[in-house]
Length: 374
Image (cartoon, rainbow, N blue to C red):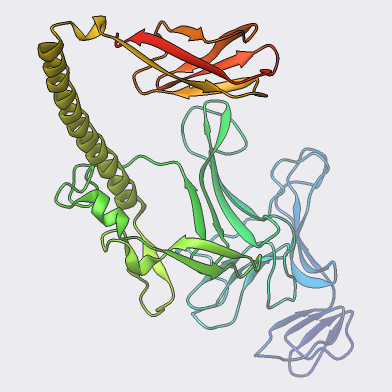
């Protein structure tokens, strides 16, 4: 041990430069009172053994300076704990001190007031390392890997983002997002919304929904990733309650999916109402015509017989008759002038029937057919 005239004490040091130098003379940097040339080990009131607490080391490990714990092989309380009487442990004293907390290739950065970088760090030159995720665990009575996971990945065209959760033991996506073009943005969303407010009504009954849809026009764009020409709905022709221009970017638009679904629902209901009204009007006109025919003929419409005819030409093996009076259930009688061999009626529908012959006709064959309006 060496003690200088100025009162510096050296242990293993011949010319101590600070109040206490151990293992080396040291240097008085920022008013240093104690200099330790090698590592410092700090141990509590227990001997380091299997099952006991660990020991803290101040010095070098893996080529970096730091605080480390030397744990026993089976000890449970060997973690390094940082605490503070104020309740806060800081990395850097203030904003813009340029101090960051790093784990693996991820960091909590002092950047723009605070930032989290997962799976890489541009400041370290470590890009796209792994598939980072964030797991949430909630008190729902399940013991499992996670209750909600936010995870980033790629689909070959670029990054995607997914929120995944569970329904019992089954895993389901809550939300999946993929940006693949200036307008072509898809989102697969599972969500419930409370409705009956002004912007989430069942349909826009103050508008003619079908007229609004008719005004939407297509537009061709080039997908910036696939370089293919695709057709989209021109956002400038869509209703203002569905889309609006993005602030600060005249080429991007924001879409209200709830309003778009409401418009479609309203259009369907409007179309059904108009179709029902149209059908009811046609049925009424048909009923009047039927009554007029019955009054003129003196017969019920179902009992009125009709007859018509034509010619099946030489060489034909199938022949289709079109007649709006024929139904799929009509009983049809056919008479041919001359021999035509074997045939049968096939594919009888509302408005037509088909004649199929076993062999092509050897000569033209005039015919008549009759049925009832029933």
